[in-house]
Image (cartoon, rainbow, N blue to C red; front, side, top):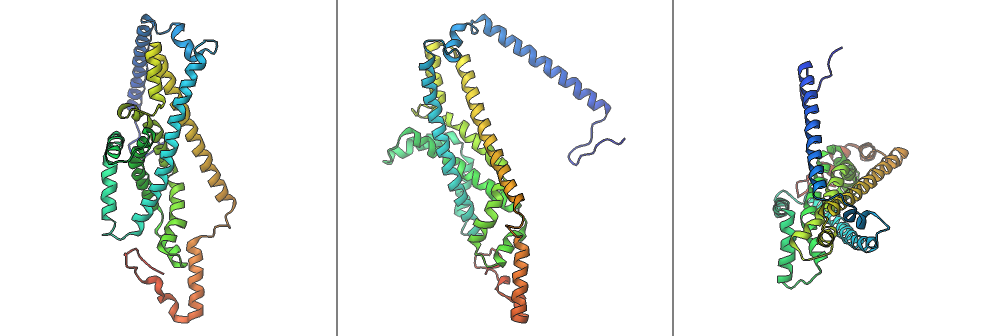
Length: 322
C-alpha cells in the first residue's frame, strides 16, 4: 500500500513517525511534570483551601450572592462593549469594502492609506488615543464608548479586508453576470458579491468577532472604566486574595462566551447552507441568466446584440458598464 501523499509536505517515513511519537510522549511527560510542580506549589501556598474557593463556587457561602452580583456587572459591561463594537465594526467594515470596490484605482488611495494605518496600529494604542484624544477635543463620552470607539477603529478595517478577500476569491463571472443583466456596479457589489463574500469568509469573521470579545479586557490597562469583567476580577482578587481562583473563573467565562459565539455562527452558517440548498431554483445562476438576456437581446436587435454597451469600460475602470 502506498503512503498517502500531500501537496504541502512529504509523507513521513517509519523513522520520522517513530521520532514524532517519541517527541509526543516526551512533551506529554514534561507537561504533566510541570503541571504537577505548579499544583504542588499552589498547595503549599494554601491556594486549595476552601475559604478561597467558596465565595466563587459554593452557593451556601454568605458572600456568594454579592460576589456573583459583581461578576454579573462585569459580564454585562463586557458583553455590551463587545456587542456594540461588533455591530459598528461589521457595518463600517462593509461600507469600507463597498467603497473600496467601487472607487477607481487613484481615488481609493486615501481609503487604502487609512486602512493600512489603522490596521497597523495596535488596538490598545487606538483605545488609549480614543480615551485621551476625544476628551481633549471636547468629545465627552463615557469610558464604555471610548473602549467601543477604539475597538471599532481597529476591527472595522480588519473586517473590511476579510470581506475584500472574500470578494476577490469569487469567480470573475459573478460580477460580469450582474453587470450583464443591467445592474449597476454598486448593485452588483451589494446584492451579488458581498452576500457570497460573507458566506465564504464566515469562519474568518467569527474568529475576528471572538478577538473583539477578548479585546474588551484591554480597557483595564488604559481606561479608568467601564467595570468590565477583568476590572471586577481585580477588585475581587484584592478583597479575597485569591488570584488563582478569580482569574480561573474569568477564563472560564470568556471561553464559554466565545464558544457560544462560535456555536451561534455555525448554526447561522448551517441555516444559510440549508436555505440555499433547499431552493436551488429560487436563485437562478446569474451567469446563465445573463446569457439568456443577452441571447434574447441579440435575437431582438439582430447584429447589434453582442456589440451592446456591456463591452464598454466604465469611467472608473471597473470593467463592463451598463
